[in-house]
Image 1 (cartoon, helix red, strand yellow):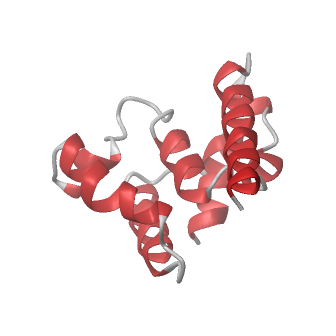
Image 2: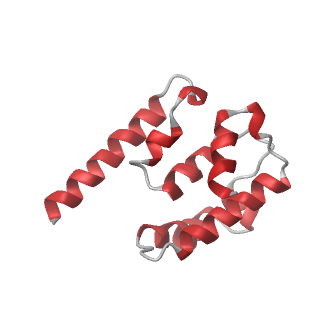
Image 3: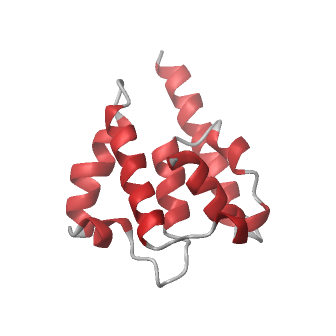
Length: 117
């Protein structure tokens, strides 16, 4: 079980590294990345790549970065029932609605919207 978990975590890190090092984020196959990277991590990263006019998730939720990590992100790693992930997706959806992000203008926004609709 330990070896399986280590292999899984290593594959997540490799895929996330590909995402971080992609020369053009718009060209990344987010569906393929979502097969390896946990959805909350992928969505959080993509939201924070949006234009500066869109607030960070902690700012949107009205909490500090540390509070957001501790109270929202960390519990998602152990969310077996995915109730936290559903709430997280709803909150990201609220952000995209409030800032009227157009999925037609960006593959990043299109992916975010498709995962939060």
